[in-house]
Structure formats: structure tokens, C-alpha cells
Image 1 (tube, rainbow, N blue to C red):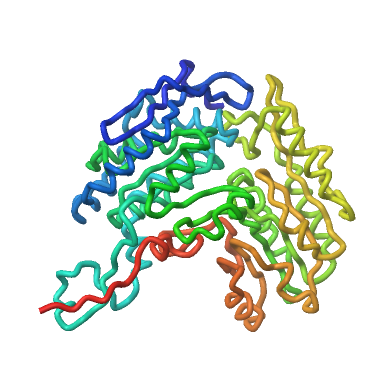
Image 2: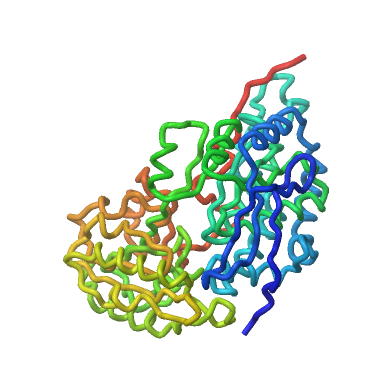
Length: 462
């Protein structure tokens, strides 16, 4: 068992153009047992406005310096002592506060460091063929498209689900944006550590800001920046749906479909790990499994595997399940119970809460078997291993599969694959023995972020 989390109250200060800024208004952050773990500085809207104004007036670092700094960030993030914490202390604190198994927190943090080193690879994969990156390229003398930023300041409303979400906005830095991050008040540690590492690697204070703030300040960040990215639930997606300046990351509603020409038993490991990997907390974790046949044996096999996962404290290296304060866990289980009408509880809401003592609970997996592919239930996504298993037939069509961030289609039917890859509401398609959470720098998450940040501008010159 690992227990390296700091015993003192950690200070998480704002990081502005003038360096660290400790405000008078501070918020206490507690762990899942309700114990105070950190104090977070809360900046007012005026500070937000001044920071973003300063960022907008500052020219980006030259390309080579950005590239060198992002490459250097990886080792600093994992090896240096930042804000008084070494890497393992930071991981343990994140695990303790966010309720993530420590192995999941460590893997997520490591992925952020790797994303810094590969940010330019992701940007290169997104760059349109035939476009040039600099107007000075000789091809512009006869006319060419130049890849240019759509703005200067990019704002990020980060979520507290897992550290890994901070890996994406690094691509904006690679492209020359100045970035303002509003961290989650549930887990501000990854954003704080990452920005300190970026600054130590060679970025200027003005290039990246950490702006912890309340809801008024959060609205100001979106309003004052040129472009923004937000994470949240469906309400957040709906709030910004009509704002073309905002890129939304909402519920994943990730699914697996197994057609009749494939034996689901051959793919059971993939199905179970897609559900429970990363603690079941990510938008790329599987929420629903559909089978072209009788889904009952599949549901019971999945439940047998998931029920064997022991509820353990976050700090245990063998922990798989997320934890919450026990009152939150009970409320989550009660909510799930209200959504199960007509479903057969294979692992029901009544067994979700596993009291670990000390005011915290692990969230055991839930498995519900449906008699038909009810779209509303298939799209209920909760931040622990919770899955709906249903039959699917060709007459059901694509409707039960739509609105999926990831769909793994386990099939030999290429016509079906064609239809699903062409379906606009399905963002990513996997096929076969691939976890729904698998990724690499060349695979876009929800399209390439650069698709949103950049545009092609025609340039011709003497």
C-alpha cells in the first residue's frame, strides 16, 4: 500500500503573468473522507480580465523555443519537486482528493507528461496536406494556404475526472496560443503542477496562466478569451452549444457492439477492461454493450468478472474502483436506482456503495440487462464502472448507437462498419480487440483540437 500524500495543507496558488499569486479568498479542498488537504486561491473576475488582456498583447514564443520547452516539460513534470511536492506525493494527493485509485492517478499523470513530449506530433497529424506553417515558406510566392491561429488566447475549463484531460490543451501551446486554465476545484493539482513544469521548461509566465475562480470568474474567462474549451455534463454542453468560440467536451456515452458473426467470449477481456479500466471514470469507458443475439449470458459473464473487483482504499496499489464521500456515493446509487425501470439488475444499485470506513466509500460496478436497446438508458453515464447490456438487431438500426464518443464494433461486416464510420454522431470507431480508451498522438479524441484552433488562410506574395 502506498501512502505518500503530504500530511500538511498544500497551497495551490494562482499563476498569473506576474508569477504566483496567493489571494485573500481561499477555498479549502477536502479528500473523499472530508479531511482538509489543500487551500486553493480564488481569483476575482478583474484579475482574470487583466491576465487575459496581458496574454493577448504578448507575442507567442518562437516555434523552436516552444518545441524545446514542451519536450523538456516531460522530465520536469515527473522528476522535479514542484510546489513542494515530488511526483509520487502529487500523485498520492490527487488520488486522495479526486477519489481515483492511485494506479489510475499515476497513469493519468504520466500520460500528461507524455502528451507534452508528443504535442507537436499531434499537431503535425492534424495539419492539412498542402498547407504551409509559415508565410515565409517559398510556396507562398506562387500562392498557398498558410495554417494560422483563429485567435491568440485559449481558455480551458478543466474537469476533475482524471489528470489525463490536461494533456489535450498542450497542443494549443504548441500552436502558439497563450493559454488560461481554470482548474477544477475538485482536482486543481495536475493543472498547477503542469504549468509550473512548463514555466520551468522555458515558457514565460505570461504564456500559461492558472486561474482558479468561482462561477462568475469562470464566465469571465470564456468571455474574455478568443476561443475556449470546456468539460462538463450535458447541461454544460447545452449552455455553450450555440457559441462557435467554445469547444465542448461532454458525456462520452461510449459503447461496444458485438454482431452475431463474432463470439463475445473471445472478446470478454476487452469488454470488461473497457468498462472498468481507468476506474470507469473516463468518457472513453464503455457505458453500454449491445449484442446481436441473447445478451443475458454476456451480461452475467461481465457481472461475474466485475463483481470480483475488491473495494479498496485509493492508496492501495491494487485498487481499481473510485471512491467518494459516503453521502455522495449513496446519492449516486440512489440516482442509478431511479433509472433502472424495466431493467434486470445483475449487479444492482443496492450493492454499489462499499463502505470503507472513515466517511468514504468505494463504488462497486453495476450491470443492468435490458430487454430492448432503450436509448435513454444506454446513454446514462456515471463516473464508475456502470454498464447497460442490451440486445441489438438489424431492424434496430443505428439509433441505439448514435451519440457515442467511441464505438467499438466487434464484427466482420464491412458494410456495417461503413455505415457507422459515416454516422455523424459517432465520433470515433474502433473495431475488434481494442479498448475503447486506447489512444495515441495520431488519434484525435473528438476531432483534432487543431481543427478548432486553426484555419487555412490564402497567401500569395512577391
